[in-house]
Length: 224
Image (tube, rainbow, N blue to C red):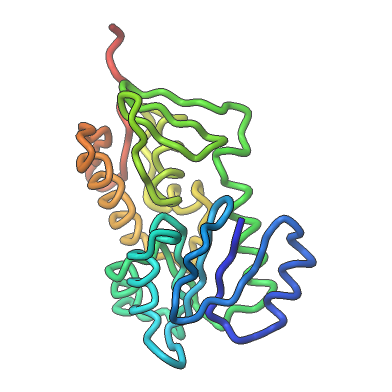
């Protein structure tokens, strides 16, 4: 994994390289690197930056070829609900309240890895014409690659692993590796909406069902 940080604190980079040897931490400036990265990408973007706003940085990351499918976490100055919504609208996958310390950064990465579907025993999931390769983090629909963001992939993998089970918003936050104290439950609705749009935008029938007042479920397909 490559971790891109807008933070100016050099201890973040040094500590991360010590506690997570397989993770490469790099500083992120206003110009998005054009060199392709190997493996997953996770960007931590501060709300306020010297040369531009954090929201603008998120938009640039979503537009850049190398980072558009990466995981983006906005580091907020406070837990203001309006700032949370603005971060998600700009393209962030989630958010946390700063400042970003070495311990908080390592904890978030550990939580992500613990909930990574590729860490499970199964390596392939199938739901109708959808096929998920967990090790490669790749989704195919009728044999054609279907690009998903990391959050969307983990959500879809979780539902495919547990069909016919209704999951509350709180459960989904915990299941895909988020801090339930930092993430508002309404953020889950944004994640689900993005997943649905990503699927239907590539011709996939919406596989998810909303259960009023309870959460979401992936119904198993009839045999034959």
